[in-house]
Length: 432
Image (cartoon, rainbow, N blue to C red):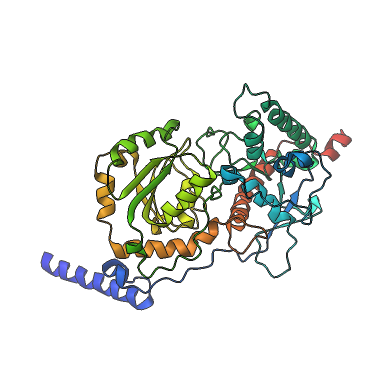
C-alpha cells in the first residue's frame, strides 16, 4: 500500500517538474550547470516612467559653490548651468563627499531633450513632487574646522542655523513638515549641530553609522555611494585579467579608525608578511591616491574593512578599478541594493571570520578563477552606476540616486496625509 502511494507521489512530482520546464518557470541548468549558462546581457536599470519633478531652492552661494572658492563665498546668486564652477581637480579626499555637488549640478543641467533622466528641475514649486535643498553640509564640515574647539566651526554652525530658519519660513517645508525635502548629508559629521531638526526629510547618507534609528533609516532615507577618488579603469582589456593581476589581496589606507574601524589594526597583524598580500598604512595624499590606483588595478581582490562607519570610499574605488571587493562588515548598508546584487561581484566576510588567522586568505586562494572572471566582467558592467559627472549620463550615479528618492516619496506622502488628519482647515477656522 505504502509502495503504491510512493510511486504515485513520484509520478506527480515528475509531472509537475516536466510542466514547469515546459512553460519555462524552472531552468535546471541554473541548479546543475551554472557555469554552462550563456552570459547574461546587462539589463537597463533606468526607470521608464516620467522624471521626478524637483524644485531646487535658490540659496546664496555661501551655502554651496561659494565654499569651493572663498573668493566667491558671497558672490551673486543664483547659480546657473552657465556659471556653475567645475568640481576642483585638486580637492583630494574631499571629493568622496561631493554627492551634494553632483545632485545640484544635475538639476541645473538643461539637457538636449534626448537623455533618459530621473529628475528634472521645475521653476514652479506648486508643480514639484520633491524639493531639493542645495546646502553642501559635507563640504562645510570639511572647510570650516574639524573639531569643536576650532573657531572656524562657528561658520559651519551659523550656516546650519540660517538654513533651518530659511526652511522653517518656507510654505512648502511647512506644508509637508519637510518630508518631501531632499537634503544631502554624506559626511558622517555633516550638519552636526542641528541634524536632529531635519530628521523628517529624505536624507542622502552613505550609511547609518552615526545616526540613531529614530533619526535616519532605510525606510525613508537614501544610501549613496562615496564618490570614488581613484581614476576609473577605462581600458581594462587584458586577455587574461586574472593572471595579469599579480597581487592576491590589496589594502592601502588609514589603519587608525573608530568604532568598527578598529578591525583595521587587527587585520594588519594577521595579513602582514604574506607575499602576495599588500596591506599598508597610508594617508590620502595626491601621490598616495595614484599609488592606490595602481595597486587596485594590479590586484585580484581589494579589502574593504569598516572605517569610522561601516562604509568607506575604498569600496567604490575598488569597483571602478574592477578589483573584486572583499567586504568585511556586520552592519554595512549598500547603495541601490534593491536594484543591484552585490554578491555578483563582491565577497562578504563577517568580522569574526576575517579575524580568524589564515581563514580569509585561504578562502581567496581557493576561489575559482572562472568565478573571479565572471565577477570582473560584472564589475565592468555595473561600474558606470558609481560615476558622478557633469553633464550627467544615463544610469550614472546621480540618476540612480534620484530614482531612489522617487521610491521614498510614497512613504513621505503617506506621512504627510496622515499628519493632516487632525489639522483644522482654514475655511473651518474662518467659519468658527
